[in-house]
Image 1 (spheres, rainbow, N blue to C red):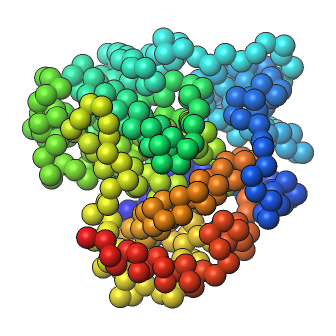
Image 2 (tube, rainbow, N blue to C red):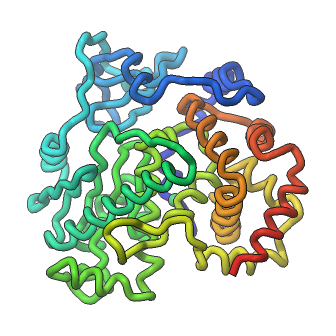
Length: 405
Ligand SMILES: [Zn+2]
């Protein structure tokens, strides 16, 4: 895994870190947990609304929006009605004035017409209950994607309710996925957002735009035998074992999108990468079967195999390096081991320390966006939920994983 799309979704951090850091330290005493905080909806209601004219990448825009964070140097973290988060520096803000209006999220139709201006002619829209699929592939493929995501969505919400007693929030914005008919047009679009790595990925979720971008896997250069004309055909093709990992990637990105729109995670908060990726991998296995439920939280054999291969050279302080910094997941040389280990640790914690895991997630979601924690603070926060003795935890972890078959 050379480079992960969430990297690009991160704003340019050094610009914000110096003031954000002190805010985190003051606001989050790590020993205190379980405090009642405002829900995302309540937080939104309390936010200041502004009408802002701003310029990014040589494009000028004017939009009403909510101030998610305001920084001393005049820069803003600004949420617009299409669900996009903008990190606006002082010199990118051409004007700003208070607005009495309450920001209304765009409807699916409005999102579609916004896109029509950005994309080449020929794109259509397919709406499901929670998703807006903007596509120029076959209607059948758009349908298939929409149904896959809706089933994932239901399964995901049910899972947290049933296993963790967590009632996730309805997304505030429609969940947008742009599906291109072929890889070339996808790459052309994606390169502008994620640079050279676009070609190496079959899809991604962009945390700032809040959108997924992907292409038709069955399409002309999607390798799965040319455009399929109906859902059954697509299911038949993509449920072949050789497609499991490919479809898992799409599901993985959708899990990121759902996690960040359900209040489970907060976009641009200081989410440890092992946690976000572990979560996405925990839920990524496709389920082509039943329409009623998606069986989640099964062993991810792909990652288990890789984790077992890693064990002989796994350093004694592996948990600490994994939880204290994102580095291992961001360097391609190390990521090949760090991803499976993130899955394994997530699996172990979800199965054996369910309540602690939920509480840990909740505390992370309460941290302000663009905050930064030091490696020490990350470890301390982890320990405050899972215990001080990381060596003992590691023993329990390895013992548990060795019993999996
Ligand atoms: Zn991911």
